[in-house]
Image (cartoon, rainbow, N blue to C red; front, side, top):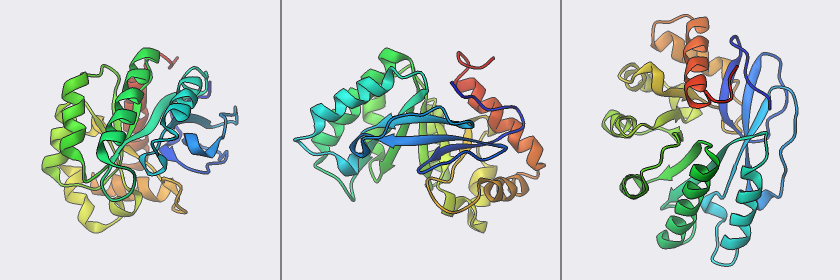
Length: 228
């Protein structure tokens, strides 16, 4: 299994990643893509059913793929999985797929990446119902401080939407959150993760190297059983 080095920039969630010196990336595999994890330097993987591509007919076959992926030693986490009220099937089907992926995450003791659009009440309801022990990383977050703190209070981590976090108005949010609960991502965009780190470090009045250490430590807290 590939793991980051202490000086690496960690891109916690990406699509279409390739090996880059000094950057460690978690590449997301979505079950409809029919892709398999590799062992390329600087890459590891997550895998799950994205709600956009879920249908009544493909739920069971795709859950089978998730179960297969979950056992791969270079799949470090599951997901992205969750809810979307803008795009995707009806909410009961999304919930069924999400709950099953949570159960798989718990069975194999691997964290879960969360996709959530306008469905925070549903997300929190499922979290309360199933009480997962594995960490949840909410990817692409761009909500308000109150929501961010509510999610963090439930033990979740936040990775910020790349386009939001580089805007000036994101500074007040990032400044209000505990450093030990944050991650940064590119999510398949063309933006360089180093640009995001530079902006966030400035917002937090930190050096880039200090921010790299913070996020490396956060990664270690989630994946502590896999770190040396």
